[in-house]
Structures are given as structure tokens and as C-alpha cells.
Length: 192
Image 1 (spheres, rainbow, N blue to C red):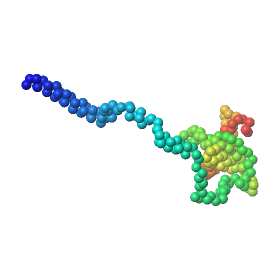
Image 2 (cartoon, one colour):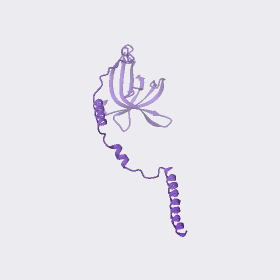
Image 3 (cartoon, one colour):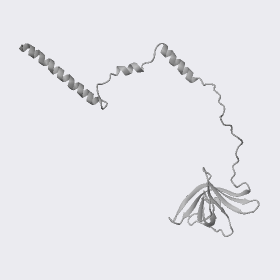
């Protein structure tokens, strides 16, 4: 009987070791671990197709290279071109130059940039009044719009020969008239 006991003992030890490794594998498999996957399976999937499947892929590639001859009709037909009205149609341009406009903020006591674009002096054909209009480059939003009156005094900015400062009583670039102190800076001093 002693020989049988020795034979059964190693078998029992092997049985005990196997469940421990299975339990360990299942624990790590929850976190993406587990037995290693064989790389041979991946190689088989990436191999080039053979036989009739290879012919199909070549036909699909040829079909992708051909351009389809498809014609689409528009769902909505556009009407005539819409006229854009800027309210500058009745005025002639006396002066036009690219510049940068600044507005003085009295609360913060600093100059704030209003925009960069073309500043124009426009003279109305009927009333002969001249106004200053400036629009921003890309958005075309009005950043200065006021009449040039006889009491408007333009002074050169201290320290620069290409910038000018003036006060206006009724600038309507924001939609309502307001008193503002404005400054403009041109690209060079010859712009004057």
C-alpha cells in the first residue's frame, strides 16, 4: 500500500497546482491580462488573399479608380443676385487709405483698438456734407461713422508723425450717437 500512496501523492499535488494557475489567470484576465495570444493567428489574417478573393479585390480597386458619371439637379433654384446696399451709393469718395483706429476708454484710461481697415471721407452728392466712415477688413463692420464738422479739431499725436487724435460729438458706429475720442494711425507719414 505504501507504493500506491506515493503514486497518488504526486498526482494530487499536480491537481492542486492547476486550479491555482487557472484562478490566477482569470483574475488577471479582468484587467486585460491572461494567457498570451499567439502571433500566428494575426499573421494568417494579414496574408494576401489568394484565388478568387484576390480577383475580387483587384476588381474593387479598379472600380474605385473609375469616376462615376452622375448628374445632380439643384433642389432649390437661386433667384436673382441680391443687391448689397452700404448707404454709400449717393456719396463720392474724397479720400481712402488703410489705417488702424483706436478709441479712448475713459473708465479704464487707456486706448482700445477699434479695428483695421480702409478709412474714407465721403461727400454726399446732394447735401455736400462730408463724413468719415471706416469698416473693418474682414467683417466689414463699421467702426467709425460721423460727420466732419467745422468745429472738429484734429491734432497730431505726441511722439508720432503718422497718428492723429480728434473728438467727435456723435459717432454712430455702435448704432446710437455718442461722444468719443478717437485716434487713427496710418502705415507711414506720407499717407497724410
